[in-house]
Amino acid sequence: MKKMLLSVLGAVMIVGSASTAFADYNFGRAVQIHLGSEVARSIYDTQEQYFYFIPSESGRYRITLSGISASEDADLFLYNESEVLLDSSRNGKGQDDQISADLIANQKYYVKAKGYVNDTSYRLLIVKRS
Image 1 (tube, rainbow, N blue to C red):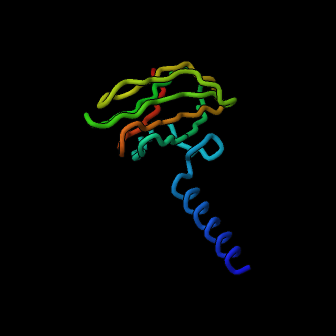
Image 2: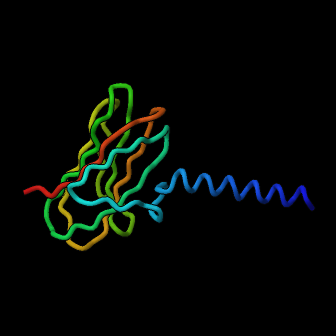
Image 3: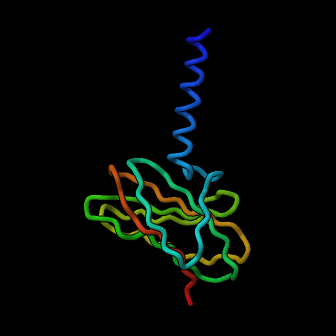
């Protein structure tokens, strides 16, 4: 009985740690970002990080994943509120990724950054184009 209880507690501790460390690893746990505010993050090999935003105005928006060093790689994906892929940018190592899209006001959009090489640092910025 004691052995089983310890195993269960150990599993809970591991799950708790994982969900805290990767709190943005799917659509349901996406982190809100604000238009015009740059977010600096780091992503690990094959990890995916999700963000969401809700534009207050319809129009053309630019989403940029930048600051990636020559030995790092990450890709950028844009989804609608139904989690349907709208567009992606999959440039190679050391290259910034960018998506321009016409978006509708007051609808939720998701952005995913996906890492490919060890530890990749990046900056994410979403702006409305004039």
